[in-house]
Length: 375
Image (cartoon, rainbow, N blue to C red; front, side):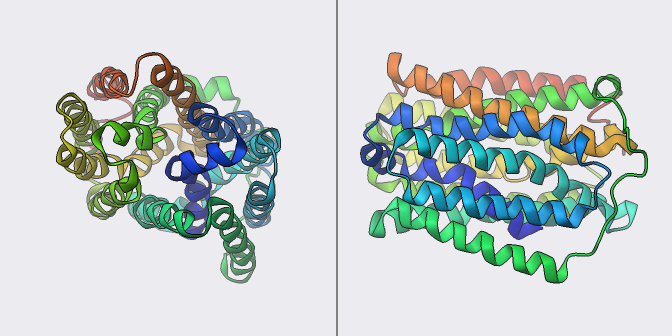
């Protein structure tokens, strides 16, 4: 399951590291190439809720295998696509299977362990996504610089093929839900705490991805446009520290950890803004380290919170979270591109800071439901 998360996040985030080369090869600008992230997110938005609802009664293992096989096909098409429209279509298809896979991973991890270990199990399952950010995307960026971005996407397709075989061999079988109708989405939204978690998710992810999708463009004014892989590596390594700490503490300290996550990413955003104002490259590295500490455990925190709030309707609650997460990604690709084209890179950190302040305010207000003071 952790490797499944790795493949998903690598497929999602790799364009951020190879954006200049990808845009040049496809004959479009960087903001247009950045929509490869947006289309991926739109696919996840379109698929997460309806696919989770329709497939809820089906066995979990075959669905996971089909989703990972979908990544193999989509990444292979991206690797060989000669045109911008076909590349965008492949990215949309990858997003479709991602919307289903994320909801499945969370439920799988929480089901196969004791109740008191559910938060830790979620952290372990999410480790793959953190490894993708910490090692995979920087390594993919470096590899793309050596042999081309298409080769890197092709390699991800090979990894996905191998993973499908591994899943068939080792994953335990889990049944779908017994009630074929399931809990209506509107009823899940009315559950205490679910809307709170979704609000934090949307604002936090929008802020993060306004910066992350266009990190190469942020680094250009600092003279670090050739160091994108290094900055991403710093973010990722500190994210590993974050996910480890989250796994140890989440079952007791979900609320403080979520507050700390918002604050740390906000501090990193201020440092990025200061770096751009003073053209100080070292500030960017400090911001990257703090950024990773704040972001690394965020997915685990938010998925655990929404699963707790959703209770028996946890799979539908997870699909709602996946939808909000990808709405944030899609909106970030569009908003970040517009800001970059019309206001320049200095506008990106300040926009993200406003959104992070909103995420923190919602978290603080969710003391009774969503992010309770005691678990």
